[in-house]
Image (cartoon, rainbow, N blue to C red; front, side):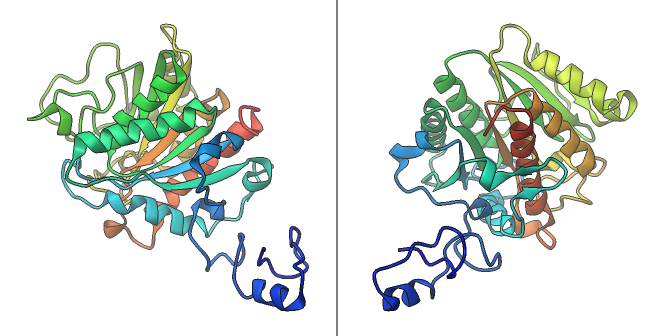
Amino acid sequence: MRSDPPGEPGVELTDSDDQRELAALFQRGENPHFSGINTFLKAPHLQELSRVGEHQVAVVGVPLDAGAAHRPGPRFGPQGMRRISTLHVSHYCERGADLLDGLDIVDLGDIFLAPADLDAAFDRITRGVAHIVSHGVFPVVLGGDHSVGYPAARGVMEAFGGKIGVIHFDRHLGAREPDGDRGAAHETHFDLGNLVQIGVSGWQAARAPARDGSLVIAVEDVEERGLDTVADQALEAAWSGGARGVYLSFDIDAVDPGFAPGTGWPDPGGLYPREALRLVRRFATEGLLGMEVVEVAPPYDSSDVTSLLGVRLICEVLAASVASGHLG
């Protein structure tokens, strides 16, 4: 029994007027945007996880901030992005794409995590993402702090079965040697594939800049070389050395905190939103294995603008993927 308002497409007639009237009392579907259960873009909530392979895109939340380097709060990122995503309608006029009509998107809910056990959390994240990818479905991971990036990318790599590259937006280096326990360190997410780091700048710990093989593109590089040149360099590095696919990781603190204040480690001087959106569109047109948006921390946000940017980044990737023929 469906409860879409009578007369809308997809309404299923019930056996009696009483049942139909009852069904119309409860909201199902996308409209109105201000009410209903907050799945991502009001996409269906898939509870039968064994059927994920019947769909094209699966959104999954990872509400973990036990690996945060400084301020906690990104555990509320999945909630924040899902809630503000209801502001969007699914049609993207600039790309001519309709995400809900052109893509079969489902929301799997959140991976169940125990906050005090980081090792167990990492294992669950890896297995959860691997389950999605192993069924040929594009994963969209809603973080969570950036510690979720390593187990998520590991899940992609294990299920994909080949060498992958990682394009990683971050204000801070993601391949430094950690302080203390490696397993709990915020900085040790990407130790696999071909790593490209975009947006690094500002004040960093006094350490070796990055492991061998990692391409670091600073904010000044973006300014001096231009977006097209930077995108070409990033793609060449990520796809080199026999990589068979690329995973996109976006730490929201790569964007200047004037536009994305709701994050655990804000640092002025980051990318502008239009720069970030243009870059992720370019990467998506070449094809991606999946993506994540991390470090959205609603407790520090202002008018949901950081959560909204996280949602827009995801929608840009999906729309560009549809337009370029990689999804849908």
